[in-house]
Length: 303
Image (cartoon, rainbow, N blue to C red):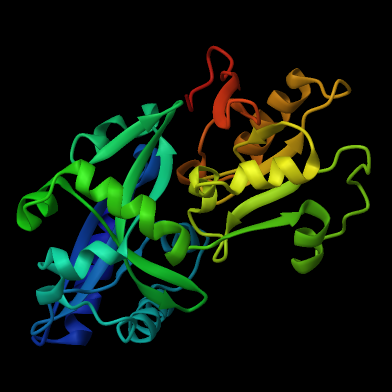
């Protein structure tokens, strides 16, 4: 059975179970790095917001022999657990005075999101784009948010500069930065650290939720303070949109080796929609700024 046929069959089964009080539809979402996901949206008629349950893994399970009724029951369970998430106050969302203290920024790859960037406010820096969301509150060890689109600016009578000013002010407060040693972070995750060489100190920069935390490198003073404590400039490896790896620059380090690390991690460990960049960045204490130390090698698809 083809993917689209599978989604339509699931939609029909859910519609039969949920009844006339609910609207069930197949939803297509353009995600980060031009990744398109199809999902099922189940909306109670009096509500204007509903969770979307993406179908990729369910289709894989079905192709591997999983019973269709079992899949439908799990989708209903996921819907039941998530429909009671943070309340979405649609009236307040229309009021810029309510929204402005909740606006934050995150980083995505500029080239791989060219289509998405046409419809949203953004600012380009390095080979990245700063995009914006409205923080809707913490939920289940993460947070929910709404991506800000151009039509939102019209509704709020605001422009992109207004949004950026709010985001630069709010993001360090809403999503405070955190830095861990690689060893400490892996220990927290229960991963063996025996293969990490002591000769290559590595640190992880993200936010407290470790969700869309790469933007923390643009928090005012965060890299200046950290590099000052170490007494050296920093290489910055884009581990994903969620976190960065900081490595003190030394004569013993080979940039080619670090570029190979970036390529290997992106190609084998990171989901396509979570890739940030294949470039190697550096932070200079003298200039107090981040720059591209070595751009992505020619021919790499991501950037």
